[in-house]
Image (cartoon, rainbow, N blue to C red; front, side, top):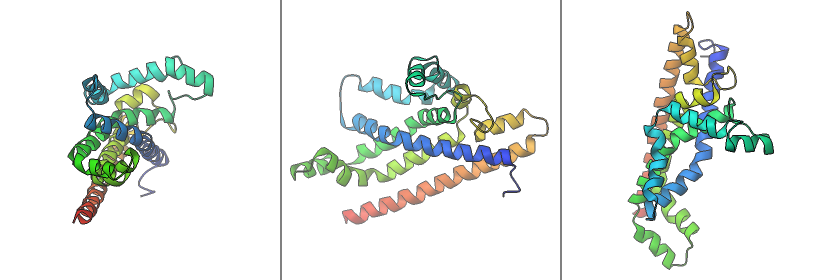
Length: 234
């Protein structure tokens, strides 16, 4: 396969994989926390929070990328502060591609985890509390094993979304070879280039293979987790 893909194509593939993995890593903790809040608590503004979480799913990705550029660009309120105070920049950097992928995949992760939490019988958690377990211990020993299949599914969906993200990424970090040119952006660039169709087809096949592999791994891991949970219950 090393001869099948050129150096720039391998570069785009490696960058996309790195971006997708980092996006899942940085968003998993907040996704679990927000899913827990939405599933287990009723409070004023809950509907607004739910809407904000899912907003990237319904907004055009270019709009999401533009909002990220406004907020996290070097002239933006957050991006300017981070740049001036800590030398951290996201716009036109691969780390910005991570942010864009994380934002776009976040709703998918939250929804999958939230549905899993809602399926857990609250009486099991309450029983653990009556035995003296605190909230963290209840979550770690009772809730987390039960929601593991949904957590895996959400992480894989977010990874697949990050792997194929285009609109928000190119708007926020542009198309810089070796820095922000991810798999999808590379395919788009090749389609604009004479004689680039063959390379675009190769990258498209790679993207399809990676997506299918991610879904198969998710299915196997979720099934194993579900079997383990049923084994513990029986």
